[in-house]
Length: 234
Image 1 (cartoon, helix red, strand yellow):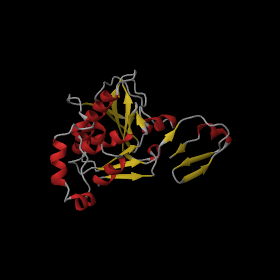
Image 2 (cartoon, one colour):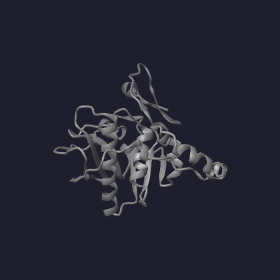
Image 3 (cartoon, rainbow, N blue to C red):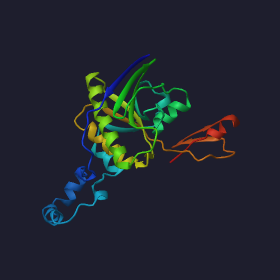
Image 4 (cartoon, rainbow, N blue to C red):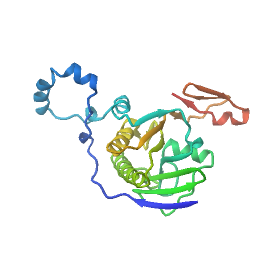
């Protein structure tokens, strides 16, 4: 196995107001007559941070390099990316799934803002360190995610990679998925690299007596021994 560590440059704390929602083509055609009037009104109004955050739907449609997939990270070959802490412990769903299937590499001596790269058989692991073992604020979490994603994009570009795979997480340290996908979209905005996203949200509340995996539209019967680890996806 090959292990490399790349350090992110220090970037200023992100401002949610700096990420406006790019209008879709349909919005431009319908609202073109209203833009000049609304712009004058908006210049005199304070910007609501929530209104400046793109929705999950708008991100998936405005960046045609982002493709939602039913593939599972722990079954993927190629380039996969996920978030960890400085102890190498999983922070997002992708890293958790790898850990559950004993496929998460053991990372050590990694600092916040660094991207660890390791080759394991046919899989290129890119582990993005975004926090220490203790919890962090939402703004710090988003800032660290943003920094490591820009570092990841530079690494992939240098390696001439064309695809990277992430797993959708309902939240990362309390940060909603809509804000994480915003960071991903911005980091790869000028890149030709395609983003594949495992579109399965896992709820980890223990369930007793359930013997079915439910992953989106896919159902798989399991043995009783596996029932305690059943997943339910939205």
